[in-house]
Image (cartoon, rainbow, N blue to C red; front, side, top):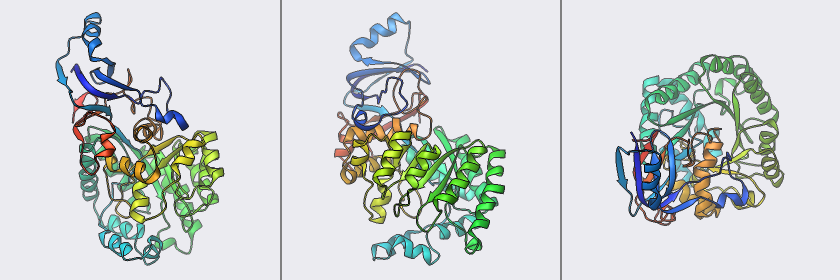
Amino acid sequence: MLTLLTNISSLVTSAANGALKKSGSDMQSIGEIRNAAMLVDDKILWTGTSRDAQAFCLVHNYQPTQVIDCTGKTVLPGFVDSHTHIVFAGSRSDEFARRLRGESYQQIAAEGGGILRTMNAVRAASQEEIEAVGRRLAHSAMRHGTTTIEIKSGYGLTLESELKLLRAARTLKAELPIRVITTFLGAHDFPPEYSNNNEGYIDLICNEMIPAVASEGLADFCDVFTDTGYYTVAQSERILHTALDAGMRVKVHADELSDVSAASMAAIIGAVSADHLLFISDDGIDDMAKHGTIATLLPGTAYTLRLPYAPARKMIERGAAIALATDCNPGSCFTENMQTILSLACSGMKMTVEEALTAATLNGAAALEFSHLVGSLEVGKYADFIIADCAEYPELVYHFGINHAAEVWAGGVRI
């Protein structure tokens, strides 16, 4: 269907003129067009001013099937949520309450809570039950403007359970109207049966899990949690090299709880992104900027755990490319709302509204190596966009705590 959106008060294109991401000060540029128009079918055919829209359609013999008046609206790219854990089972709301009473994430995990608690729930759940959880969260994410989402495994920690999680994600990928990217995260923690044999579990990941995931084509990426109390840099390198050899691209949960030089390792090994980065060092920032590794920041996790926010301003000033994502998961950040993440990025990490929008769209897509297809409203990319019920794009952050998305479109279809 050929659709013309016209009289758009503010069209935020996130246009990059062919570039796949924006770094440093370039993140401030969002390509806004006032009193704008956009012509789409499943992809974007043209953007410009409303004044020029009729002439463009006449010259190119376009006859829109529908015309949408966007007076008083902001149109922007659909959000790309490049880090989530929405396939799981069970609840950890009581652990959240315990943390509010002063117990730490690490203390609760050491008592069998945290990731291991969700692991037990996942192992006991059916694939259909896990799909139902992911489906509910994905539909909510869509209502808030997400049109591309990454889904990780990591709560099974056995071959059978990790495959169950990824197969659940594959089911969602087939049925949802948005784009789904999948990530294998068998190295999310060490399961209790390997508590005294960590290297044995790494052998299982490398020799059985990764080959099985690759043979079924279940994951686009492989991720590993590199941090104090989890996987060392050396252990992570072994897993990531195995994944690269199996044809997967790689990501890293890096330096979330302490600085273990995980960011530098991720950059040097060629990871597409390193995520969290609350305790990243200056060397880590410089290595990521040098090698082009996307810094995916997750301010919702810092907010939930009451930890220091990642140093976004320093990263931008040193030329890094930043993405934003929800980290939606049952333990440390239970939100699927990217609009909330924009607010936290600006208030907690001192990002500008423009930087946050770039990070949640174009750079989020770059963190999934998908920015040639989505993440900005440029000719030839998929028509994935939000019609927001505000006339000025800063209202997306200024008026916080509500859902600004009046309509959400994916592939030129209202979803």
